[in-house]
Image (spheres, rainbow, N blue to C red):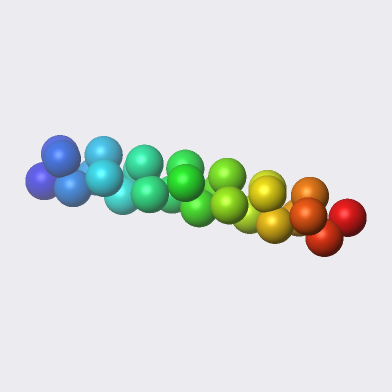
Length: 27
């Protein structure tokens, strides 16, 4: 369970990074 939470968290972090990159590329 803990490993799954960490995985979801790290995946969320990657998603946030991707969103930042997308916003920067659009601007």
